[in-house]
Image (cartoon, rainbow, N blue to C red; front, side, top):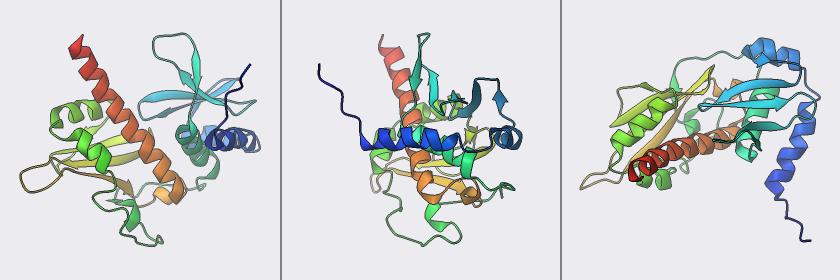
Length: 216
């Protein structure tokens, strides 16, 4: 019988599950007001509830349309672990939003410019209404910048701002994510990439869900 190959990402995720167990779960519960029971900690992440097994560290979520639970992927698990385990004790939002490469104490680069989310921007092209509905379905609150702009709860206690300018005759579509200036009190710089990837994946998922519903 052929064994399925485990990716390095899955190995790192599984390794972090064991590391999670070394941290004080009571502090996590109190700090972020987590719903919990003897078996799990529960946390909402981009419009979906995840549960963290208190004895194994495994992060799972209810598979849609079934009674089974699915193992969360690398981006999801690592973001949740980083926030729960490594966020600063006194983390608080500034309510000022900037691109991730404009955060204080971060080396400014050109690689995170307007074309960084080019793939997603192309997907959102001419879909402003669909994008707006997807953001709203994920709990987003409309903002006033760009053709579409929403403050979306990454976690209930940690919002991020999505900004989109649709393409026209002269310019390509542009997509930006704006982070609270204190985001690095909640997660490491590298983790913002994991969180951003999952957020955009969920937005695309919501748009495709609506498109499939209309085609039935």
